Image (tube, rainbow, N blue to C red; front, side, top):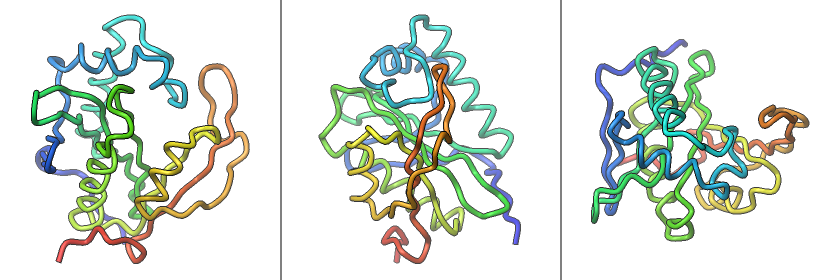
Length: 189
C-alpha cells in the first residue's frame, strides 16, 4: 500500500499553550535565536548558526520539503506571547507508510513540558490524519533528555545504529526509537 503524503494545505495545530504552524521568512530572527545557541545544536545535525541567512535557508528548505510531499515541520509558538521557540515535524517514508521525527527547542524553554505537548499533538496528527504505521526518531547517545522524552511518549529503543549519522565532520552512533500505530495512545476517539 502506497500512501500520498502531500497535503493540500499546511495543517495548523493548537495545544493548550502552543500554536504549531508553518514557519515563514518573518520567523527568521526567532529561528536564528534557537540555532545560534550551542546548547541547542550540540546534538543537532546543524552547526551553530552565526548568520541570519542560515535561518532563512532552514525555513526555505522546510517549505520546499512540504511542497514536495517529503515532510512537514511545524514552528512552535507560545500562545501567551506569540514567540516562536522551536520546531518539530516529520520526514515521510512513503513506502513504509512511516516517518522519522525531529525537533528542537530554545534552551530557555527546556524542562517545561513544551516539547512533550507539541510532540503528542503531531503524533496524533501522524497516526490519525496521515495513517502512519510507525514513527522513528534517531538520537545521539549522549542526548539523555531526548531519550527520556521519547520514552515518556511511548517510544521503544530499537538499539544503536553504529556510525549512522554524519555531520560536523564526523560519524555519530545514533540510538533509534520507534512508536508503532498499534502501540500508542495518540488516536483520537
